[in-house]
Amino acid sequence: MKRNEGMGWLVYLLMLAGAAGVGLGILRPELSAHGTGVSMNSILVVILALIAGIILTAVLLELGHLIGAKIGRYRIDKFSVLGFQWKRKKESKKFRFSFSFSYDGITGETMMAPKDIEKSNPRHAIYFPLLFLLLEAAICVTLMVLGVSLRKENSAWQLAYIFGLVILTIALMIHLYNIFPAALDAKNDGYLITILNNQTNVIAYNALLLADEKAMFGEPAPELPVYSEVTNFTNALNQVSIYHALEEKDIEKALTINEYTIKAQNHVSKNVYQNAMAQKLSLKLLYGDFQEAKELYINLPLETKKFIANLSTAAAVRAYVLVSGLVEESENETKTALARCDKAIKSLPESVRATEEKLIIESVKRVQEKHPEWDFSDFSFKEDKPVETAEKPEDSSNEKPEGKEAKEAEDNPSDHKKDEQ
Image 1: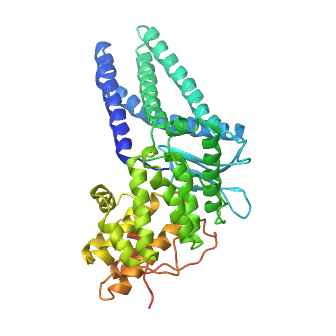
Image 2 (image 1 turned 120 degrees about the horizontal axis):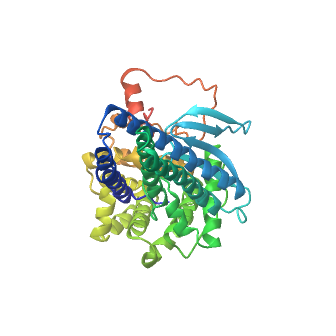
Image 3 (image 1 turned 180 degrees about the horizontal axis):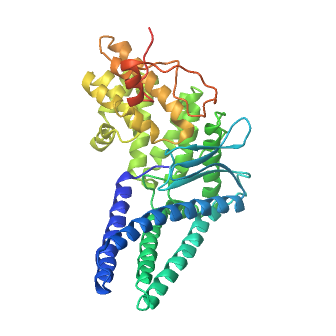
């Protein structure tokens, strides 16, 4: 699913504005009005309430996802809260605990897969967190009411009011992000509410979840339905089919599926359409007739060229590498695009990242064939060692490179691999 980082920052600003409003408009006047003042006790209570609010809300949010997923007939493959992660192992299918902050969500992630692609219902995993929010809010309001009622008899109850107010504010901030009705920079339920409004989209969503599970275990992606009538959401499913076709070197099939999105220009967002144009250009330059592909690029609208130059998607990055290297013949611009490869690959669903990296490596090799004098040593590509998207065996004994090469590998884990010649 396409993420919107700009919309994500907007929600962060709304969250901060809400926190500032509560802090300056309610909390500070309350402390001053009842004689508590901004004392060390009140500051300590606020800090503890902030920590408790983040932990409690994160746990209840993901617990809601977990319970809702089980009721909706899903397998749980990963459960992560604030870096504490339980992940199912491929061999034993048992869960293993670890620390990892690579979760897709504001405070954690519950990765699930349908037991029945047509009957599993993802809506339960969306609505159960809201039930836990009501429970958390009820507890916080109870503390606040008791604090207001009893603080005249004992000033310590004023701290209970502060505790409840701060936790409630944190809960509402986190759930504002989670239920915001748009695709943000991390996974959120609000976007799913807007798309899971019919059975077709539910099946499509379940197919995506199943593909992600297969990718996590390093298994071949299942054959997915292809949608000729494309919307923003069904395009996400078609993208998985496109990458599956590219993995099988069926370029014509990939271009055919991609063309459905281009023809649906009036039914998809501008970014989805422009990304399809970038995908078409990159595949034509990489696998098609060069003169025909060059002509395609020259005739592209300025808006599409700007989209590709912005390097905001993996297809745009790949297209810009090929345009800069083969058409414009600019070494610096090619390297500019390569510097964005890692971020572009990570923005894709896990099930297609390895295929995208192979495509970028092929694109670089294509440029190197035309310009063998260009120095790409800083990017250290290595064709026979693609990025691992599935779990590595526990007894992996791969030796780490030393010195400068180790530093380069850490800085650029996905696209900086050395080409051994």
